[in-house]
Amino acid sequence: MTMKLRLPGRPEELTIPALLARNAAEHGDLPALSWREGAGWTTLDWTEVRRKVAVLASGYAALGIERGEHVLIMMGNRPEHWLTDLALVHLGAVPVTVYGTSAPEQIAHIARHSRARVAVLEGARELARWEPLLADRGIPLERLVVAEAAEAGQHRTYGSLHASGARGHRPDAFEKAWQETRPEDPLTVVYTSGTTGDPKGVRLTHRNIMLQAVRIDGRTDLPEHAEHICYLPFAHIAERILGIYLPLLRAAHVRLVADPAAVGAAVRELHPVQFFGVPRVWEKLAASVRAVLAQLPAAQRESIEAANDLARARAGHRERGERIPAALEASYARAKEQVLDPLLGLAGLDRLVWTASATAPMPIDVVRFWAGWGLTIMDAWGLTETSGVCTINSPDAFRLGSVGRPIEGLELRLAEDGEILTRGATVFAGYLRSDGSVESAHDAEGWFPTGDVGRLDEDGFLWLTDRKKELIITSNGKNVSPALVENTVKEHPLIGQALVHGDGRSYLVALLVLDGEVAPAWAAARGIEPGPLAALAEHPAVRAEIAAAVDAANARLNRTEQIKRYRLLTGEWGPASGELTPSLKLRRRVVREKYGALIEALYADPYADPYEEPHEESHEEPHRGAQA
Image (cartoon, rainbow, N blue to C red; front, side, top):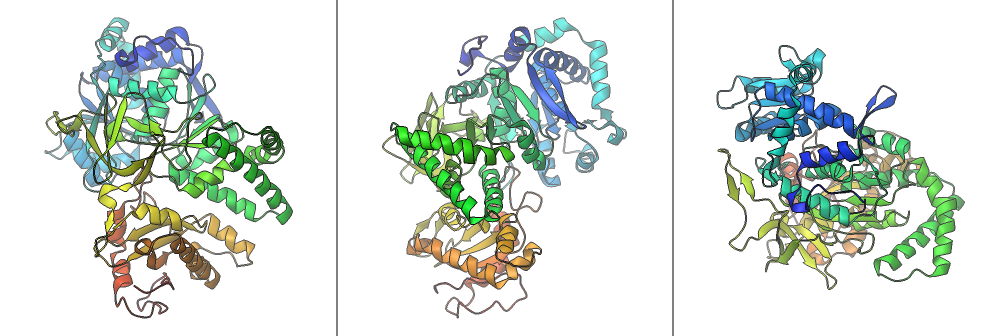
């Protein structure tokens, strides 16, 4: 471990309540949890956290919550959510966080499948989707608890539950309850966000999670009591690990950011030493920096680019395990102090010593962009089913573009078709059935098929290729990785999002989306009148640049992988509009269904003139590229 903390048992014997007891006893005066109230932050230390958890546990016990029972939670990253999660765990109950962007049918499925009797909600927005379930005889849900008292209506409020817990709290009963918890007991159920089909319930035990936390901690190098900015949903396994379980292990400090859109402001204020972002977050941050750079005078841009080159050269030596030449180290130190850090400081990124990403392949151009600023993003790979990461890059062993080496105690092997198989103590036992039992997802030898396809290099680093089910098989039998093609075309800063299609077809087509932050800055730098994204997508200069970007990408791809036609869309994709999951993964099926007519139009009359405009009224532009 990076911190010299006493573990209250061997890693495989740890439980979450045992860690909280240690933190209160040995690190009680250290800040544990902070959140925004008005213009400032409210903070609880570890002693206060445990006291509130004990009171809340008594409140939930009085509500009838029993050991082993599932309790659903739909709240943002606010203290009521974080404390409720821990309080339920201390009772032996199983907290299940549901994405706040879930559709009513997804909520109904989870409520029915989990058999939960109680759901803890934030306010009126959530109530509108949950109240109808109380009248559904096929769903066991009986009671709703609401954090926002003014919006609770007839339902029980979080505040009244806390008050009843304070009145009826019995310390002996609280201590007895958590001490009965065993490492093999379920800690949480995480429902996958569902890129296809209904979400599946992944049951994870204390042992799964504690071993994961200990092994991640061993692969990072952070200052003691480092702050974590917590902004991703707790329904995402990454934030459950980084925002709840790892801080408990490290006795660290969590800063809750209720609105993900405010994370940039929080980073600028706090100047954190660590930051985790899914690939789309890093892409958007890079796009913002590029947009600012485009407005700078040429001489200043040249100075920055020279500093970027030094940082990348230094990262290259580290990546290869080579000693950094003294002259390069000195030049980089000057560039970092005089050029890079002042600019990074404006965004709050100047103190970062650990930057990481996971959940989807990181575009290599984004990785190398940040390497030019002295930030080596430690890309990792894993699944909800593996309690988080399976492989991770670390400061002393990384390969830019790879997802690192396996964590301690985890085995990997590749099937004949390239699918990654894994087994180990951090891999879940199976998917939750509606009757409460668990359905194994392993083969006879204990291997779990991840659905991801990749390769292992000679140094043991894993390189992701694609999702097995998302591989495109063209009509001539060629396999194509859509992620490879999409990431290649997205290397142009104007292209923020892309979907490639071609399964069972003779050639590939694509839907492309302008980057909402870069496009206006790019246009302004060229004297193009500012306007909405839809207007920019129609501008001849933008269309010409996109066509050139696709041609440049095609030049780097083999014939089967090349994009023959595309449409340029006018609005960004997101969870609210359905194209992305709440964890910002592309929902390919949703995009294909939503834009099915446009995709089919790209295959209509395949030998027609590719320069011809589409006949239907549309905001999209056909690619002026090679014919099929």
